[in-house]
Amino acid sequence: MSTITVRADREVEQALAELTAGGRSQSAVIREAILAAHRARQAEQLRAEAEELASDPDDRAEMRNVLADMESMRAW
Image (tube, rainbow, N blue to C red; front, side, top):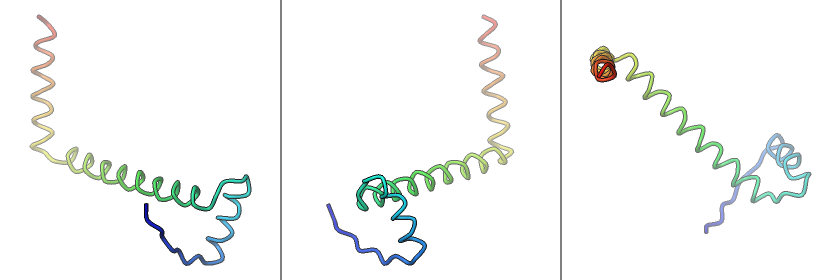
């Protein structure tokens, strides 16, 4: 495990004080914030990829073909 040094401004210090007021450690709060930021970034990347695929005419045509194939199998 590594040690990270963070230079906090007044806004960050105030937020950290509020988040640790219930007894949680600064390290726990900071780890949670980093993981939350990472999950948000991954979600944004997935959203962007989905939007790109949704706007791709070739991909949309392929989706329609797959759905049509699946629908035809359903009738069996």
